[in-house]
Length: 303
Image (cartoon, helix red, strand yellow):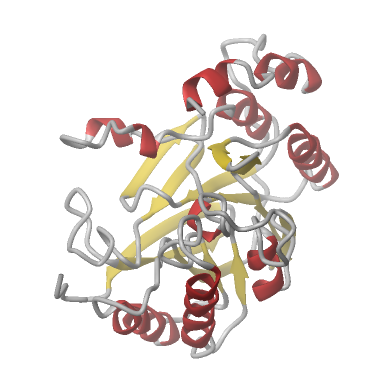
């Protein structure tokens, strides 16, 4: 299916109406006063893409060791835990998930998980849609988690989104209407609490500007971000953490930081992605402000 044709007909106008006409807002944005929060650091590591080959397990362990050596109080994996579950046979999917789970066991802190497109099982194979691991089921079973949820830590509300819309045997970078309504309910219920939102596919990015090939459609942001971003601006959202593009980036708009956290695998374990090496992002929250530091793992590609 042609992704662009799908997006044009996917009901985004209905989404805007459901959110109370957020697109027809005043040009001048009045952001809520930032609430105070505790002081803490956590690790954000995205796009691990573990596989048995090309020293990927060793590269993943380098990232785990760096996280363990830090003062992070917890970690968030920003999606694409495995190299690929979309196109490979069932045994390979299970092997990759087991390989990732074994690596994560070495982390000495709680870990939260975000669904990535490559974590979705069997869409591009002949696997039955009734198989116990098909689609998002494998992710939910392995990590014992829904695909979108929220949690709190030291006065900050963390909201994890599912940016992978599955339709038939294909996926699209979109937040569905039910999840959008849920997101606004969560934001409204904790309107006085500072929030950090996490999405695998970016909502805001300058990716298309970074070099030959960076404007590929595979790096397209969430298609209905223009309905979601105005919603975030109505509440006390400090930052949005993103993965998917394998780059390190900080885009700021209306006092929200859209932070893309690089990739544990770099350019799929084959060196740098548009100049950004394999690494982990550390995020420090202090009294309502967010700062980040990207730490390369030192992985040396053999591919």
